[in-house]
Image (cartoon, rainbow, N blue to C red):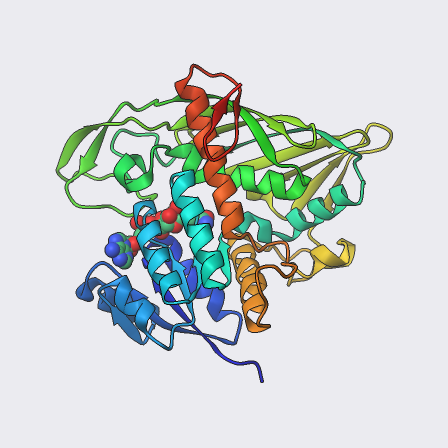
Length: 392
Ligand SMILES: NC(=O)c1ccc[n+]([C@@H]2O[C@H](COP(=O)([O-])OP(=O)(O)OC[C@H]3O[C@@H](n4cnc5c(N)ncnc54)[C@H](O)[C@@H]3O)[C@@H](O)[C@H]2O)c1
């Protein structure tokens, strides 16, 4: 029988509940404890989520011997202390993105994780979609030829009104970047993963469309509509809209639009990769279809039907064709890859399954976001991605 693995989660908010759901579906993981910002809120959340132990501090959770894997789903500014504490206790860590809001902090966590010799992962969860893995396999097999162009967008509308507010917009909590760090980071990780080329240079033009927001006196849930509560005007410095040109190490060029102020777009993440013999397009709002574009033959739409997928992608699909799979299923696929690795007692130097993004990927993501900010600061000039983003 597989050894049971104890999971503890710090930060039981919007995405924390999905981490808990996902690991419960694996069958051999026990959700042992959660930690929130106070004893009272931890107890309330633990009761709502059916978790046996509740802690008012992350220090108490990481010290619990029944917790083998610590999940970090706190607001961004707490990622460094929470992850460091878990690593100091030699627990495996699954951190939500962004790993950290500066390259230096992300590097610190990567080094600490390697030193602790534990399993470390970042939830770039769109990797867990079966048709994302299908696209990745097709590109690796040369089905569309060498990729020369990658473009797309990640657009949302939940920050369109001045009354929409989130800790993500406060630099001391969310980091210097808002939209790019929050969702652009997903897009960049995804296309690099699918195409097999890394982003090495960026040219960015960032905009703050809503320059003053009305912050509610009490904190509100992310993605909720603002009501009539008491509010204070707050000047916003971070971007809610971005246009970015990209250069990849394999020679591909590209562009991405990122915005959280685009009416009608809820979670509009899509990309298209074009090679010499074909193009592939995937849109997470229509995630059960993969568009295949050809010049010398008819275009096609490949449905998420396990019988039509290559074997490496088929293992990410769990329902027959015609049964839609979605965000939560892909999230669970990420957990399956990471926990399978932990259960087999593997080391980070071993070969990892594809939906498993590590702190190394989290560090690279922090470097891309930093280069985007630096490019914009310098007046939209080509900027190299690296720990110290450099202007070309
Ligand atoms: N992978 C994804 O698709 C995805 C989606 C949403 C959020 N995220 C990431 O997950 C993280 C959390 O985002 P969210 O939308 O769930 O935010 P949220 O505000 O809904 O949840 C954060 C939770 O952390 C708790 N918290 C605050 N201080 C704490 C402390 N000191 N100790 C313990 N808990 C504390 C809050 O009370 C809240 O319950 C962010 O880093 C975000 O970028 C990732």
